[in-house]
Amino acid sequence: MEILVYVVLPCLGSIFLVGSMFYGAYRIAGQPKLNAVSWGLMAAYTAVNVALSLFGSFWINLMFGVLFPFAAAWILKASRACLVPYFILSAAVFLTDAAVTMGFSMLVMAGVLFLNSEDLLYILLVVSNRMIEFMVICLIATAVGKKAGRHVTVRQVLLSILLPLFSVFHMYSMIYLMQIYMVEGAVLLLLANLILLIGLNLYFCLLVDVMSENHRLEQERNLYRRQAEMQYRYYAREEEKYEESRKLVHDIRNHILAMEKLYDSEKAEAAAEYAGNIHQILNSLGQKYYTSEKLLNIILNDKARQMQSEGIREDIKVGELSLDFMRDMDMTALFGNLLDNAIAAAVKEEDGFVKLRINKVRQFISVTMENSSGRKPVRTKGGFVSEKAGHEGVGIGSIRQVVERYGGDVQFAWKEGVFTVKVMLPVG
Image (cartoon, rainbow, N blue to C red; front, top):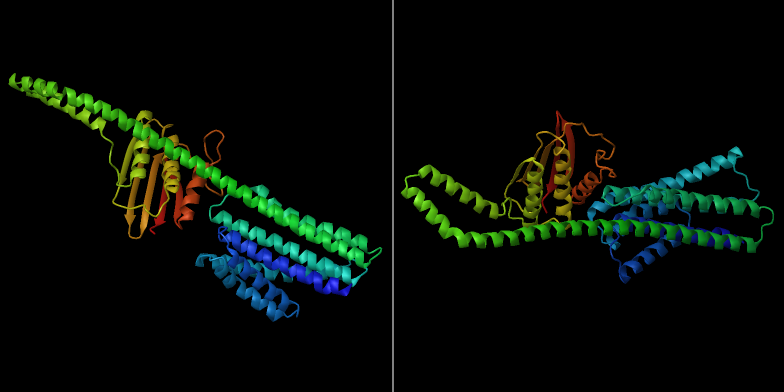
């Protein structure tokens, strides 16, 4: 009995804790691909940690808590930026262990928590500690994921909290009933229930990860479809212009003869006007050049044409720059949403305008968007509430995600009928 309670249970608890910490580190690192070497190193680290933790030394546990961020970063091949959240994760687990142990002791001393067996109290303490630590690990991984632009829902947060708490309550109920007749078989049954509860918690965590990944893939699919539609419209217009240009070339001789006759008749003003009309026809056939970045040029032309059809004054200027460090999908999400939001607001104004400036400033790409917006937008904690029916500021959320993905900064402001967005993206 004592071996089960004081050796087997602590070992299982330690394995679960270290494994949970690696799971949290894995989620923080963006769920990188793991090979057999990575799995072997994690297993070796866990085995050494569990073996030495049996001595019950505070300093040994503290040493492994300090070493964990470096070990996790090395095994998972995570970036240096992950070290800070890894240290937060390790410190949170250490403090949670201390807090739960202290709170447990206070409840026992106050008589709120009463069990007639020291063994049962110890089992409950170990289970409570590990489950609450697992909850803290999940919450930290979720918070870091949200900051990195990953999709996080209220359901995911609730699953990270409610399931571990239910596990603690379930184990307490079983232990409380075990007071009546405690035998070795009952302890084995309790351990079996604990293992199944651990499996259930891990299953739901993996389910949350799958839900988040499905949302990410769906978002990417929508962006690719949007990008493909813009490119299709672009090339369809190019084909139309090509046909028009062929007709114009065919008729150019007649236009030249008509102009010569006007000049021969000393009708210079009429000839100049005729030439101006021809220039307008030629200009209408050309695709406006904003930048050498092909995809960005397509996006800007597509949105500029939309603004012209809506009667919105457009003022777009792009300096010499390179966006090679950005994925096409992210470029579409950033500039497409910026312009869509600006157009949606400007079209409601009598003299609506959209002004966009994109330049390279030292080691940053600077993007400044201004648009007319007579109505002050409703600000929320995450940004602004969308005025579109059925939307909740999704465009602004997508802009934030892209900017944060590249380590940049975005600011939103409204003043005297003008809505301004400023984006700074580090190059490389």
